[in-house]
Length: 269
Image 1 (cartoon, rainbow, N blue to C red):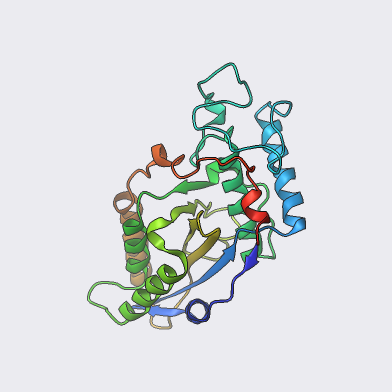
Image 2: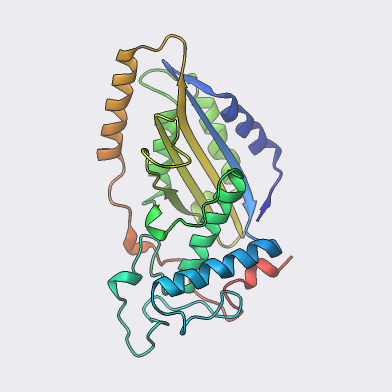
C-alpha cells in the first residue's frame, strides 16, 4: 500500500502529532491516506495470510489464493459448496470469512496498520479485532467530542477542517468505516495511553483507505486527579451510550464481486 501525499491532510496530521489541548488534557493522533494497490511484498503477505485463514477454518483444500479466486457470494460457502448456510466459525464482525472479499478487507486493514505503525507487526490480528461502524455521523460525533468538551469551542475549526479535507480526498459518504477494537491492557497501540480510537475509512471505488486515530497519552500541566476521574467517567458513558450496536448485518454490503479476482483492483495503475 502506498502512502498518498496530500498537503491538507499532512498539515492536519502534523497538528495531531503535536497534540491538541482540550481542557485539562492533550489529544494526540494521526491521519493518513493510502492507496490500496499492493507492493509485491505485500501481495506475498496477503496470500500467506489468506491461506492461514483458510487453514484455521479447516478449508484450505477448497480456497484458492486471493489473486486467482473471484469474490465469494454473501450466502455461498466456498469451503463447502454443497452447504449454503455459513457455519458459526466462519462469521465475523467484518462479514463471512468464507467470502474472499471479507478476507481481502481484513488484510487491507492489517497492512494499513503495518504501514502506519512500522515498528509493529499486526499480521496476527483476526476479524474479531475489528468492527464496522454504524454511520459516518456517529464516527464524526465521536471524534468531535474528543476534541472539545462542554462550551470549549477552540478546536471546532480544526475538526471541521479535518472532515472537509477527508471528504475532498475520500468522498466520505461512499466510505465503509471500520474501527480497531484494541485491548487497553495488552495491545501495542494502547501502551501508555489512557484511551485510544482507531478508525479506517475505506472507499472501495477510489481504491483508497484513510486511517484516523486519536489518543490521550499525557496530560496538560494543569491536570489533576479530579480531571482524570472526570475523563474516565465521560469515556465510560461514551462507550456505553454513544456507540450502539454497529450494523453487522450490513457488513457484507458494498462487497459485490467482479469477474477479475479479488486482487484485480490492486494491479491496475
